[in-house]
Length: 414
Ligand SMILES: [Zn+2]
Figure 1 (cartoon, rainbow, N blue to C red):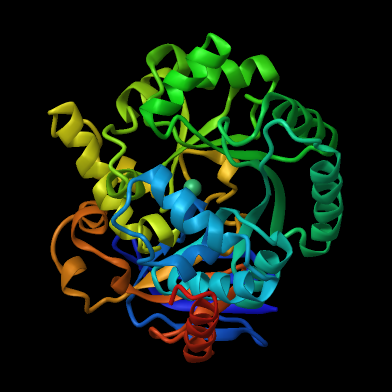
Figure 2: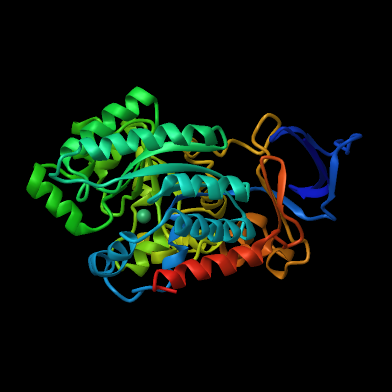
């Protein structure tokens, strides 16, 4: 399968790009279509790498707007968790398909997910044509863990059929919903199977206080003691990490994914300390979190809030540059996320941005992308060399929206 994009604009020059089997085979001013290529005339549209959503719960599109004015723990215990007990794989499938349509429309090619029925999530991602690392969710404090572990192993085995486009991960929800023995099992199993681990960490100040009270150390040190802080560990949130924890995370090579919009919506009261994380050398990515707590999956919106929150919290307009913020959103600052570079040999995941969009017409591109643009500037989304959105149209989107609404209605939340 080969695709040629011609007449694209990149760094002020007109370029062509050829993709072969999901990989960029050629990129530059001299590149033209070859016989047998599917050809896409970009008409001068701006070529940029696709975005990476480093933390979400895709199927939670079904929960959009449900209990949206409650604080975190009440939202989870009174609204989300009771409905999740009734979730069926088809709910997760259509909720994830809906999320994928939204991500394709707004330029996300790859995401890290954690949710119930990961098999249904993977089927949906495959059918939508995106890439994802799908985490098997783990909850369990004091109960007998043997059943939870057996289900996880069976699910991970079943998930192998979706590789390599869809990766597998172990996803203990958090240190307050997964007990020490489950976390230890996660660390051992992840090492044995060479899988990444994806969990929420240090989202609220309460979580930190409870961790210190129960374990005598702050959350990052607690994870390290268990053996869960490694190069394949993705920590979502990290709002309350202190300098010592950031240094430990950097030393272990773990990645932190900031979710500023979800943090603000759930009013956690703090901002992920990005400048300190950068200084310590921590790999950082950007995420939306689930649509239940955002409620959008348009990563452009999160990108703007991320940059603004950092500047505001630091009382310093130079706290983060636009180009640097853009790099965080495309996964360039966190290799674990798997984005690769938009270059020959890299994954053919890219966007063509509307040449006629007023937000991009004037000014320096990175600044426009961070502060002026929204996902609506994306005209074409290509993932693994396949055109998933062409001139603003995602095939089958109407059916996906209708089926997801039906499932939400069936759960009594839509
Ligand atoms: Zn989350």
